[in-house]
Length: 410
Ligand SMILES: [Zn+2]
Image (cartoon, rainbow, N blue to C red):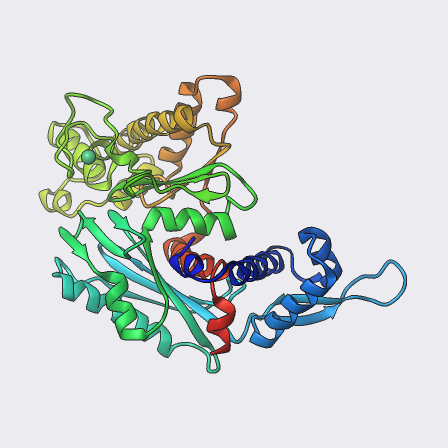
């Protein structure tokens, strides 16, 4: 619940809550009739008429085609207005910044991708975000009003303050993302850890729809998880829930970027995968890659995946091993939280069948009971924009449970 709710009177709070409930039902089940809405919410017809009237006034909702009737007059159906408003989602990765604008119904109406500044300072990093936002705003179809901006970024994020506490891959601390963007655009801004935002995106538009307990596991440069419990994003006491990359899997293991030894990330983060492959080639394993010294210097996980797909057994072996480590990490999550689904994404596991198939087997093998092992483990279907979709879901969710009607009327 945000602070605005707490400061208004209880009548106002109740009105907001009812509005939000109706708006979310229209989002999830629209086109839907007033009478169906009344049935689902148990609100009185008079209250429903008021709420729908306000939603129509604000143009967030429009009347659509007539619905089916079981005799008598066909009901007027309501759905979200997919063409007047939009929100912007920005994914600030360590190598690229991806910004997309989406309508209230989640349809993407503009997108852009920029290279992220290398080794940026705080102000360069923020300037990069603004550049991406400016560019996607320029690409918007005319007549679209932007209602808010969501930002997803790696590392530790305080979503209440909208600050990045620590972004290890940029080596930056304490970035006031929300304050900076609100100052520049005068719009509501939400900031969240990228994988947590992604799990909201999966919950609204992806493989997590309708699922109460699921976990998104993203493995790329780093490894993180977004945990949805009882349909809600779980943050933890100080916003570090889901940092599975820093769970210890080997007490004597290699040094991790966080300063501990033997973290999962030190085995399966993309730099670790590349390093293990190099070690093997340099100690004499025969691979199609790395025949020239130079090639090893520019090696990426994508190159290893490609070589494995073409039958390179050293590459396949390293990926298989990566899948086993990740599978063990996922089994730890499954045994701790007992979700019904795990959604896997990211450059290491999301796109490689070598890694994905192995991690699925390994996680199931290590699950405690047959019913825990029945957890469905799937790859994300949200595609290259997944993180930015998560970021705009973040702001949509906030608006849909808050004062979006007031905002739209302005
Ligand atoms: Zn670590």
